[in-house]
Length: 316
Image (cartoon, rainbow, N blue to C red; front, side, top):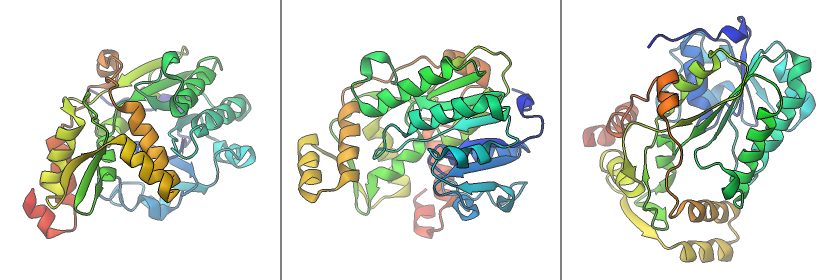
C-alpha cells in the first residue's frame, strides 16, 4: 500500500498533543519517518523523551533528528500555551490519557475544537478506545473519551477518530521484577496492536480526503487472551517473571490501605475490562489505512533484540 503525503499540512508541522506517551511516541516516529515536521505538546515534552520509543528502540537515527522535533512542555489544558503550540499547524493529533485525570481527553479536545478555526487547523485526529460507547459511560475514562468524540464530531472540523484496542507496549506495565500480575480474570480474547502499526495507520488517516468525521477501530492481526499475551512476552523478554492473577478485591484492598492513587486507578481500569469483550470491527480501518502487519512474536523479537541486556537477547 502506497503511503500518501499528509496533504492537509502543506509542509507545516503536525501537532501531536500527548506525543511523549505510550501511543503518542510511535505516532511521532512514523510522522518523522515520512519526512513530516512534528511539534509535540505535553507535560514531558523534551528532546530527551524521544531517545527511545516505547518498544525500546531509538528514533535518533531518523531524519529530521530528535533535536528537530519541536517540543513544548505544557499542560494541554492551558489554552494560551496550546494556542502557541497550534501556530502554523494545519493538522493535530490528540493522544492523551491519564488514569488519575480521566477527563483530560475531553478537556484537551474541547480546547482544540475551540481554537482550531481561528488557528487555521484543517484536520484533527483523536486517539480513542475500542470500547467507547454510550452504554459504557458509567466508567469515567470511557465517558471522557465519548464526550471528546462527540465534541469533535459536532465541531465541523474535518476529523478522524481512531479507536484502539490494547497496545502491545502496555505489556511492560504488567511486569515488576519477578512478577507479572494480571488484575482479575481478564478472559476476553483480544487483538493487541503494535505501536508502529498505530503510528502508520494514524499517519495514513491524516491524509484521507473528505470533510465528514470518520471513525475507525484498530485491532492487531492476532488473537490472544491477556494471559497468553503476557506469557509470550515474559518467556522471551522477562523469563524471571512468573505470570499470575490477583483477585480484584485483594488489589483494591491493598490500594486502599496503602493510599496508592495510581494503584487504585489501575484496579478500577482492570475491573472495568474484566469480563468485557473486545469491541469494534476493524474491517474498514484495515481497508483504508492498511491492515496491521506486526504480530506479537515479531513485536517481542524486535523489542528483545533492541534491549541492552545480553541475557534478554539470548532468551529470544
